[in-house]
Every structure is written in structure tokens, then in C-alpha cells.
Image 1: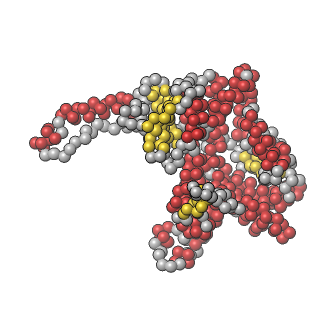
Image 2: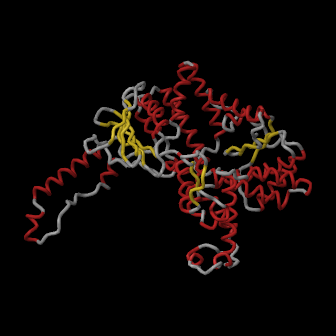
Image 3: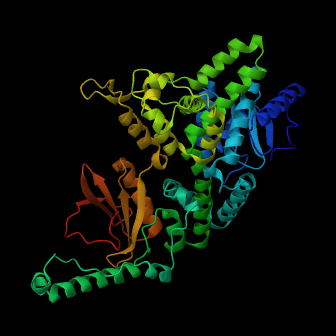
Length: 512
């Protein structure tokens, strides 16, 4: 475990750290205590392979990641300058080969991350003692290995890791399951479908037999809904499996570990653009206005440009994030927002407008507190921002295979970005019926939001879900504007694909 706070820093770095910390606090940054450690390449890569933690449960993927990082360093394809962990206190690791200029930049960057971790809403429910919790997870898995054998535990971890994204990051903030009595109070009353008719014609236009048929159909649906399993479609597939899958006690414990860690890392995936943009904004401000010496300018400029470089046809969250924060600050300083500003339509009126309100700093702190990447992009990527950043949407030419610009339209560009980051780039999958066709089979449904299910990945995920559930698994998905149902009856069998029709047996719930 990391040692006492910042004893690993040299006197020079300690002095820089204290000065940067003091200035960051003066600007209004608020963070848990940050503990720095200086590491060599091998140790840095080892901790990076563990996701930033000194100890993780035994599994082959950590070694594979360490090998990848080591080769990247050896071949000059990149290296890790810093890592910072969402914890109380925060732990930050510095690369020992960094120059003093690099270390100052990194420490300023770290304080931006630490402030974001502590104050952003989406991190509010994360475990702030995860450093200890990860060590506890490692101990529990090792005990299972001693009892069940390394091969059995490793195979089960493989299954769990393949479905670790099937969680609901919003469930930490919303109570979704109501009791039966609560659901009963909110069940809709029966209102038959009636055609408009004069009083004397009503018995002929809306015959009693039809009204009774509709009532019987309504009561049948209500009865099915009350006995539905689950009570409502649930997005937290892992939680559903923990409660209802036929797992042994040690398997439930391992799955709960994978789920807990997935929820810990989920906010980082949901705020990657904002988090990196916020840290980059503050390292830029602190370095250029306070801590950069004249002899360090060229080196700093080289390092900073590497951080915010936008490759052709690529996407850099550091660049987009920092530019959006700077754009928000500029607009709110000048009052270039709101309905009155948007109504300006003469040439150059919007660009010239300046009410000197100087609310930019206040606004970016507000954005840092309550937004995630999806609403950050959706609200603040404007046509003016797209033009200034020269953003575009591209696609591969089917004839030549080359990437071509297909649009500079702000709406299409924003939509393409949102498809990539909504639900961390994963499709929305719900458990709709845990007793499909009254045979204990699992019915999953894909909620289409612009991102289709990757059929190749779906095969392996369904295989693993079939093993975990112990019964056949079905997945409803949209493909090329049609609804299909994938069936996997045998864990080692082939997936059958069926186009959904009126004759296809329906699950307990209306499919979302």
C-alpha cells in the first residue's frame, strides 16, 4: 500500500506540489488529500495494468495488460505520465523519468481530476475507500481459489467479465423496484375503447359483448403483469442474476465483486470527456499563468500539444473537453447564451454581443458539478463550436476504403458523438422476462437508441449468459429496421435467428 502522504517526493517536487496545491485551492478547486508516489516504468505499468490499484484479484488479464503496456514503452509508442485514483485520499502516481516541468504539469492535472472526482454528481455514490475494497476483493477471490481451484474460479471470472457492462449506472440514484402493493395502487383503471355515438345508438355502436371482451382482456393483462418476473424490465442484468440465477455461494460472491467494480468504474466512462477536459483546463491555467518558467516554455508547449493533439479522423477527449470548457467560460463571460442572444439574427450580432456579465468561471464550476458527457455534448456543442473546431463526420468510402468527410452539419456530428458515448458506447439491454413461455428461460431485449447490437459480440455474450442462467436465453434486437429474436438453447450450440411476427410468443412485458 502507498505510504505516508507525499514522503516519496523530493524536496524540490514537494515545494512545487505545495505551491500548486495552494494556488488550485485559491481558484476554488476542492479535493480530498492527494498522496503522490514516484514510480519506475515497471511498477507504473504494473499498477496501470491493475487499473491504478496496487492489488487486484488474480486473473490472467492483468498480465496481458502489463505485457501490452511494457511493449508500448519498449517500442516508443507511448508511456504513462501519471495516474490518479478516485479515493479518499486520492492516490496519484508520477513517472520517475519525468522532467521537473513534466511533474509540475502532471500535479496540476491531478488536482483537476481530484476536484472532479470529489464534486461531480456522477461520482457521488462511488466507494471512496476503493483502495481498501480492491484489496478485500483480492483476498476473497484467493480464498475461493483455495477451495474451488484456480481453473474453476478463473473460468467463472471470464464469464462475469464478458457481461460486466450489463449494469444500470443510473440505478445508484433511482429506486426502480416497487412492492406489489405499491404497483397495485398505480395500475391503470379499465377504460374501454368506445366509438362516439348518440345515447340511443350507443348499445349498437359499442355493444355490451365487446365491452366485456375488452374488460376480460384488460384483467388478463393486469394479472400477467402482477405475476411478471421481473416486475418491470430491468437494465441491471448482473443484479438480476445475483438474485435469481442458479449460482453457488462462491459464484455469487465473485459476480458481486465484478458488479461492484463495474459500478465503481462506470462514472469514469460516463465523464471521460469532461474529466480530462477539466484537468487539462486547470493544468493549462496553473502552468501558463503561475508555474511555468521561461526556460520551460518550449518543453511545456511540446508536452501540452501532445495532450490536446487531435488526429485526423480521430477523437481526443482531452481536446474536446478543454475546448468546450473554455468555450462555455467565454460565452458566459460575454452573455452569449439564452433566448435573447439566440434571437439575434443580423450579421455578426451574436459574435459582437458582450454584456460583460463575467459569469464564465461560475458556470464551468456548475457544469463540472452536475453534467456527464452525454448532456455536456448535447447542450454545449453548438454550430459555432463545430465551425471553430473544424469538426466533421466521416465514413469509409465503399469503393476505395478511404475515409471521406460526409458532413459538417452540427446536428449530425453531435448525434454521431452521442451514439459513441451514450451508455458508455454499449447497447441498452434489459431483462424482460425471467420465465419466458413459463419454462424458466431468459428473455432479453435491446432498446434501440441509434446503436445496434454487434452480432459477433452478441454470440459470445449470449453463450456466457446461457451458462450463468442455466437455461435457454433469447435476445430481441433490431437489425436493419426489423425486429429479430436470437435463441440459444444449448451453451455449445448455434444461435438461431427468428424474425419476430404476431405468432412469436410474447414475453411477460410489452417489449421496450
